[in-house]
Image (cartoon, rainbow, N blue to C red):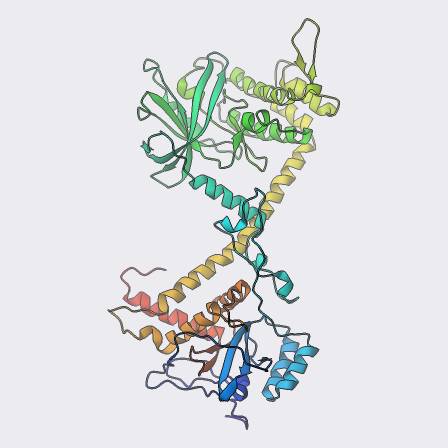
Length: 574
C-alpha cells in the first residue's frame, strides 16, 4: 500500500519474477520511478557506466536508509536527476531511527537538521595526495608488493574504524613480506639449475666448520626449492668428498626425528656430481633473513648486552636438551653453525653433518655431549673478546677472556662454568639454576610473540571468507558462456548481484571521481557474508532504476545462482 507521496509502507525482499520495491526515501527527490522488467524481470542499463556529474548550486542531501553506504541526490538542470553513492557507516540505532522518520516525512530540510543534531555529517570523499611513505630500509613503500595506499585518517568519522583494523599489524606484515621476497629471490650464479629433487639454486654463505680432530671443513650453503612440495630448503654442500670414505647416509635417519623450535630440522642427505666433483649435500630447513653469529656479530662488530647473551645461551641449551635426550650430539656447534633471525631467534644449523661424515665414530657419546655444552662457552668467549674491557692481559701468558665489571655475578659464574674453569663436568640443570628468573623473561617474550601472531591470525581468518565470497560473485556476474543463455547473468537474481558489485567496487565520489574506500568494501562484504537484514539501495547504471534489498536476500541470490552453476559444472569448486 502506498501513501500520499507514492511511497510503499512495507518493503518486500526482491526476487526474480516479483514486484521490485522502490526506494521510499529516494522517490520524492529523484522523481525516477522504479521500473519493472519486461517478461523476465530484467532491468536494462542503457548507459555503459555510472558517471554522475555534480549539480550546480545544490547541496546534496542524505536520503538513503540504514545501509553501510548511503545515497545522496542532487537535482540537475532540465529536470534530470543525478544520483551519487557515498560510503557511510551505520550509526547508532536511535540516531538512525530519527533520521529515517525525518526521511519518511518527505522534508529534506528537516532531515538535514536531524543529521546535525545527531552529529552525523555528510561524508566528503577527498583524494589522498600524500606522498608514499618510506619504510625502515629507505625504500619507497609503494614498491612493496603488498603496499596499499590508505585513506587519510583525518577524513574519517569518529565511529569509523581505520583501515588497519581490517589487516594484520603493519610491522608484522612488512617482516613477513620481506621473508617472502627473500625466499623467492634467486641470485644468478654458476650453480647448476637442478640437483636431485631441488631446483632454482641460489648461493647463501660459504663457511669453514671447525672440528676438533680434523681441523676445518669447507661448507657451501645454498638455497633451493623442492620439486616435491614447493618449499624452500637450505642445502649444505661439502665438496670434494674422498670416494674411499663413503658417507654414512643412513646416520641422518635419527636426525629426521628431532624437532625443536631452535633447530633447523634435517630432512635428507645425498651425494652428487652435479657440481663437477663428488659432493655431499645435507638438506635442512631454510630460515629466511637469518645469518650466522659470525656474520651477524663478529664481522659487523655488533654491540651486545648481557640480556642478549643470556637469550642466546637459553635458546641453545633448550635445543641441546632435546638433541641429547634423543641420544645424539651436534659436534659442530660454533659461531658459523648458529643462525640468528632479525627478531633474535636462534637456530642450530648443519645438525647431523659430523655423523654422516663419520668423524667421531667410536667416540663416547657422553663426552661428545659435554663438548656441545662447552661449545656454548666458546661462543660466549668469541663474542666477549670483541670488547677489550673483557680481555685480561696476563704477564708471559696468553690473554684471557673474562666478563667485565658491567656483567652480573651469575653471568660471570655461568661463563666460567661453560668454559670448564670451575668444574670439568657441565650439567644442563646447573645452567638452568644459574639462569634463574631470566628463563621467565625468555618465556614471556615467546608468549607475547604468540599472542601477536594469534590476534593477527584472527584478522586474516575473516579475509579468507571474503575471498571465497568474491570468487562466487565473479563466477556469476557478466558470464558470456556459449553453452548457457547469453543473458543468464543479466536477468533476475543475477542482475541484482551485478548491481551490488557495482555498488561495492564502482563507487563514485561527489567530485565524479572513483572512490577507493576499502572500509566501504570490507564493511559491505562482511554484511553480505553474515546475511544481515540491513537494507542497501542499489541503482542501475543508467540511473533510472533503484532497488532496496537486504543483505540477507542478496546472499540468498548468490547462493542460488552459484548452486545453479555448480550443477552444470564438470568440476565444481566447493
